[in-house]
Image (cartoon, rainbow, N blue to C red; front, side, top):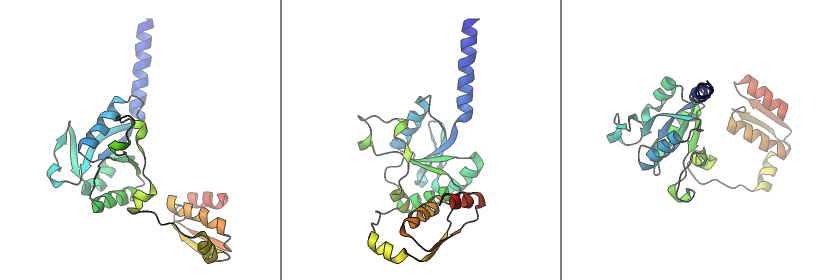
Length: 205
């Protein structure tokens, strides 16, 4: 009876973990993408469930990798809606800049979390683990090197000014609003269609 009870408890845990996993697509059906898939599947504590791949190469379109369908990056919109995607993992090492930007823009439009896999040179002792899958840096979202501005010039431009921020409740907009508050503008006008998030930001500021 004891063994049956233990088996039942462990089976229930596995079922609950499976239900809690987020559907995720891997961007990049090359070696890095394959290693990412295998690493996620081996990690029993991973919150991700791989359901397929997308890739820039037209040659890989509608082929399969270890049983998972490879779709072209242009199909990401459809895949997000069809599969209730929560996240995408960028595992492609040298993506086409235009395709990568299109993928990022699509994810932002659907509020999909963008994750990235570091290059193999940054893997710990040559091994890759799910703990190394991180949220993408803002520099990667921009697709260029960050621009560092002169604080004195910014202060001169913003102090005692009335400033309108559109999309103020979003992740980038709210970050801008928080930064603006340090420069003592006379008024900040927050504009967004997300009423609850806008209210929360207003209360915070």
